[in-house]
Amino acid sequence: MNASGIDWDDYTERVLQCVEQVPRGRVTTYGAIAEVVGAVMGGGGPRLVGSVMAAHGGPVPWWRVVRADGSLPSSHQGEARLRYLEEGTPVRASGNVDIKAAFFRPEL
Image 1 (cartoon, rainbow, N blue to C red):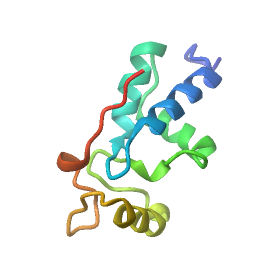
Image 2 (image 1 turned 90 degrees about the vertical axis):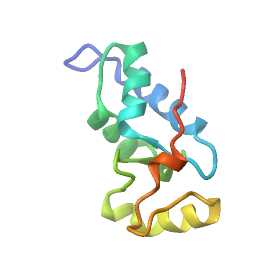
Image 3 (image 1 turned 30 degrees about the vertical axis):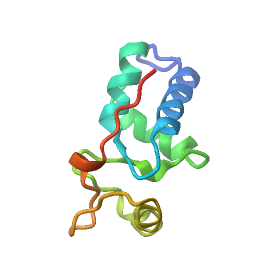
C-alpha cells in the first residue's frame, strides 16, 4: 500500500484491465480510468494512472489512453500517430485525437 492506503499492485492491475478494454480506433482518458478505478479502490487520480502507465503500460495498448484534450506526451506522438492511422482512430487536424468521436468509457 502507498501513503494514501491504495494497494499499488491491485490499482495497477485494475488500470491495465481498463486499458485492455479500449477497442481499436477508440481512446479513453487518464481521468476516465482514474474515475472508474477510484470508484472501486477509493482513490487515485489521473497522475497515478499516468504513473501506472509509465511503469507498466508497455504490454497494453497505451496509445489508446490520452489526455482530456486528446493529446499524448510528445515522446509518444510518433508511434501513437501511426497506430491511430492503422486503427482508424478519429484525429483532428491538430494531431490530437477527436475525443468526442473516439471516447470509450471502460468499466470494472
